[in-house]
Length: 177
Image 1 (spheres, rainbow, N blue to C red):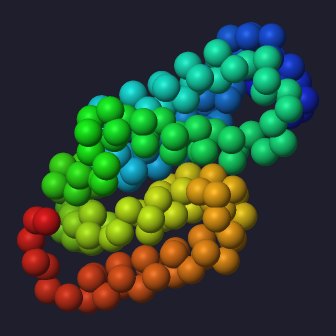
Image 2 (cartoon, rainbow, N blue to C red):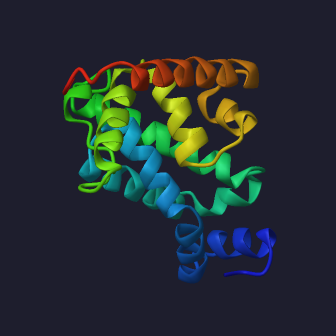
Image 3 (cartoon, rainbow, N blue to C red):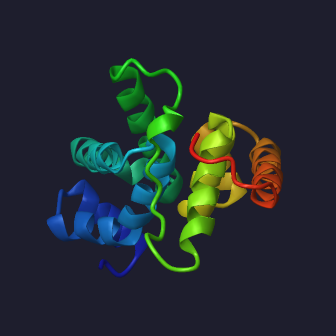
């Protein structure tokens, strides 16, 4: 990986494969996890992450002017996800097909399935904040930059989502959504 952020930006701007590989190694898994929550499909999530990196290659010369690369990546992911949903003529998340990563067996499998169902019941705005804060590891300031809202609003949406998730996990399981 390049030694400094400046080296990374220079490598990206020059189109050096190792710079893109380092960026993917650093953020690929978190982008994918957030995309899974946003899009509800592993395949669509993979395509959205690919869209982000293709966009980076195309815009590589402008990357020197980016101040917060992490926020830029997740904003790009959000736009890629929205574009994919619109292209599929789905203006809202399709909660019937959300395929969140979950344990397949063992004592935690049922808890994972219940949490998955509870996440699918959240409003889209709250799922986005959860995906960006928990799955992507962004701060509330970074989430706010990605979603173009205040840090207080991002934190409030997160708090409301967590309250709903806690309540849902206390309730008896209602089965698939």
